[in-house]
Image (cartoon, rainbow, N blue to C red):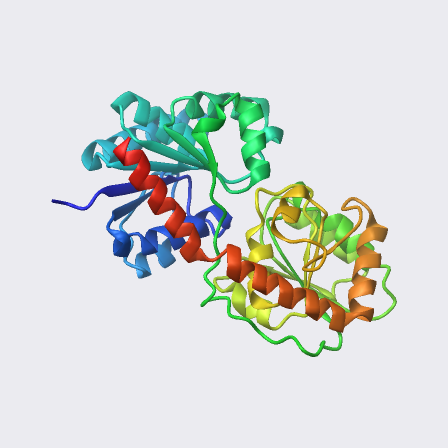
Amino acid sequence: MDKPLVVHVLWTLGRAGAERMVFDLVKRLPERGFRVKVIAAYGGGEMEKDFRDAGIPLVIGPEARYPWQRGRTVKFLEQCLKEERPDILHTHLGGDVWGGMVARRLKIHPWISTVHSDESKLPWRQRTMRRRAFHHTDHIVCVSDLAKYAAKDTYDLSAKRLSVIRIGVDLEQFSFHSHSTIHHPPRILCVGRFVPSKNHKVMIKGFAKLKHSWQLDLIGEGPEETSLKDLVYRLGLSDQVHFLGTVPDVQEYLSRSDILCFPSKSEGQGMALLEAAANGLPIIASPLPVFHELFDDTSVLYAFAPSSRKAWFDALERVLSEYPRALERATHARQVVEQHFSVEHMVDEYVKLYENIARQ
């Protein structure tokens, strides 16, 4: 008898938390008794090579840059899912709406969706489309308690159809690194898309007030990149702030940094936070409820108010003046990741879900 086929539908294969979570999951499912295939409905991206190099079966859809071209996406998905007839369909992000539309048409079950963020703040049109999709899924997985509560209230969903499976970190890839001494000048790292919710501008303005030298590496890209570069230039920080774009190996930059800053105003879980903790890197983060689900004050230093420049100035000053204490927090954060956020634990939870929902 053939092993059950799990098909994951994503929007693209950019190097963000959802895509990396799917990569870690599908790479391990074959050894757990499943066949896998990944469909990128809207085209490829930076992680396409990672999936192919890992031997993961992959199908890339045609780009549809304009709303009136979405019919091409639906037609492509319908053809793929007709050919595959998956035993389990698992959708993410834009795959929920457009893959879900096809799943309803072809009556594909079981259909699982993963919610990767707090969706209560999405634009009205997106929420309307996702509400329609989620009311036809068999089960919805959320990456945090916050994402679960937001999905339940935003889409008026039954709690019985919702569960939480937190994103796991590959502890072999993000092995503990000793940051016993601080560089001169200190090396600060920030990982995240250049969008308003990531709050880069407030953090940079706060750091500009520091009297001693420092260096900030920004990993990411996005629509705010030009305005961020303009801000850095106006503040006279061009020699201190470096824009690195997207990188294939975040581990390299985590290992050579002294501090990770995570200034987001909202997050679903915060993959970069977990990876920095796995690496043993001291962390300064916004005091978001979702971060408090992961780490308490013994593991992470929280900037008191994420929208305050002074909060980021004070937090960085504190870490620089008490770096041994910051290293103690980082060690504790690594222990928390080892106990609760390993990729193996995440895979175990999804395998249980697949097996249970298939039986039902």
